[in-house]
Length: 257
Image (cartoon, rainbow, N blue to C red; front, top):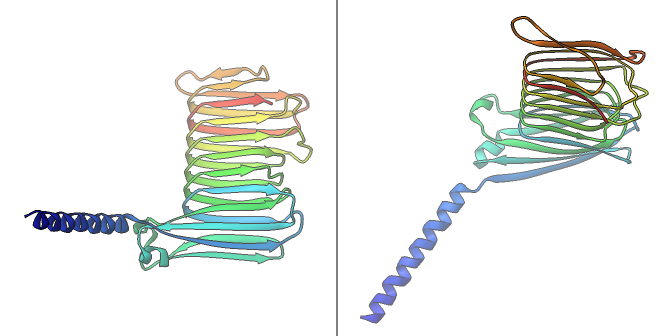
């Protein structure tokens, strides 16, 4: 009787283990990594288009662009329907995540997360993200970025920036060395804006928000509209740098370092 019980117990445990293994296997994602690097000049440009996934771009002291792309898909079929196109033409590195058009990107939940290292003076000429956050660290070249769903965060900026965001906050921190800075443009629909600049900046400032507050560290006056919205227009010092910020739903802060 005990042998029969032990045999049934063993069969039950084996079946449970097999079921658990199959369940975990069914839930496991397909993960693939692609790594490429290019020798470039000290001031190359970078273009990137990504549908799903976060992007981190970090400056380093090498004349090289290093790209690490991690593709995560629910199935092998979804993984096979995603291609990473990377090219370098005359120090202009372009990166694009492409989905099989026959399947349609709207039905493919695969995502591509990028970690990219670039020379400090790299120009980020066009960074376009649909679903994903963008994090930029220490890049001192011009920055142009468009995001649909995802936050933007940059630290150590030094040159011109043009940021357009639909759903997501924008945080932009400038270093004290801004001799190449002429213009900062930030446009958002749903999301607050935090802009940190040197206390010694000379700027012509224009800020507008429909639903949200405006705060600044430079003693500039905020005007409240009769029905809805607020705006700030003023000059800091000699007004060398143009700062333009517009948001529909979100607070705006112009702060000094």
